[in-house]
Length: 102
Image (cartoon, rainbow, N blue to C red; front, side):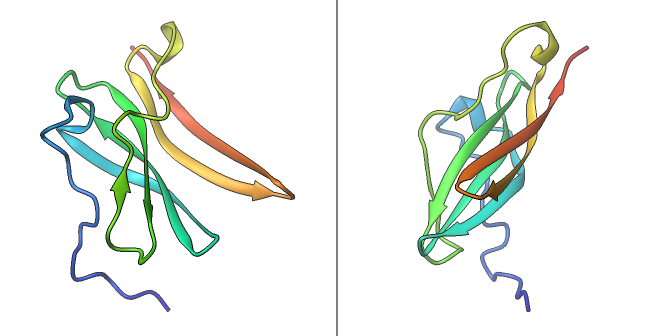
């Protein structure tokens, strides 16, 4: 059973880091080795989407990486990378995401 956290939302925009200063949402979650791992969509001042990473031992208090894990590259990703999903198949992790362009 899932219980809504009293700290909801668990992740909020971080005004001190421009790449995730406007929005953070649509996270993919993975629990492994007694840790919760989140890959999330982050939108910065430039309205470009990137994928960030955060980790927690309790599922409510997260430590975020200072830099995004995935940045948009090329014409097909000109407006961003977003909506990550992660799966573990055998011993490999697969992270998928959508791209946004004009």
